[in-house]
Length: 473
Image 1 (cartoon, rainbow, N blue to C red):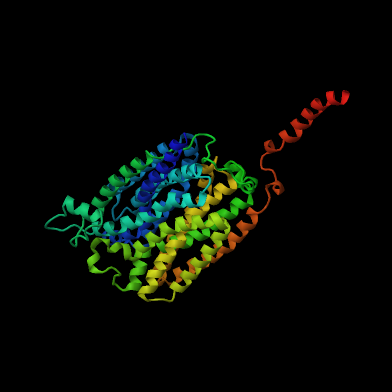
Image 2: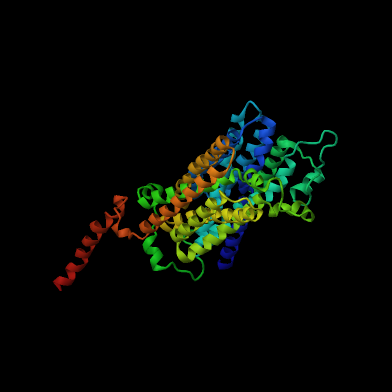
């Protein structure tokens, strides 16, 4: 029994990483920006709305997905997500046209975002239930693949999205070599339509594969030899989503998530052209690295540290608690954005890409861990679905505001300043979260009369009945 449970714990993490790597390609949306603007004649605001719709759909779909996951388990729900994600790219290849930007919003945005939401919640919910002893670290590992997805996707995608050659089309073996990062290509690709079809098939199949490894632990399961500390038991209580939303702590956690995620998404949605403008067309990658040069380009660096940040900040929060980790993380991120407004050097671009990725990734370890800490693991899927709607709000605000600021000024300075101010707001909000999380449960107003009725109504009667014979003797 113990060996089997331990084995299941690690297979859940493996399955979660496979699923999350595919889902994380959404963070490489910036590779679509130039090809779509060139092919369709769209401006920056038009393309950024597709990213906003995808992120909003991603967040909103997590509410029904979380509820369904709590009821039927992670495997089936993640499979639904994989099918939706694959279908979104296949439909996009058929419907998107210069006169139909709404088709991109419908396919990549609405359907693709829903697919990500359905699949994303499942590894996190399963990991929290399998690892109550290491919530921060394991949640970080479960979502690390999401941060790294852009790393494996951005380089090959930017090559394959190039227009196809008029004389000799790219061969299947060359597509495979470019997709694996072995080859940098020969100056032409397969075009955006063929790429959408290819990515739709690969993404759908990979998510279905990872979903087969996901499962929930048996009811009442605990790690061998582990007992929850008395301090955690005192703070934590399994509540449903209605009870959670009545608590000020949930509201502040939601607002903090909005401020922190908006700042990051504002930058990430345009990171490739943004950093390209600072580098003035030059590259970090030496020629000898070939296709692997993407690992040291700004988008690649951002993705690597996005993944590292999820594990690092999750582990740090296991020691110093979630709100303190949030405050430190957001202060550091705000300073980075403010400094970016006035730098031009290549080394500054390198450091900025690493630092922004590191801190942005931490959001997705700290907020699910905090949700499980404060509201319990029993209804985690749906509870975190509601908290995660903050990411949907950020997904609309961040890319849209970033696109508008760039179209209005032609520069990225205002975007950096705005993102930095939001990070400082997030740091201040995390202090309020810390204060509310220290509030004893006994001092809170009861959220459900059924929680308090049985105590005064049943126990006094039972005591009177038992004590009467004793007094008579």
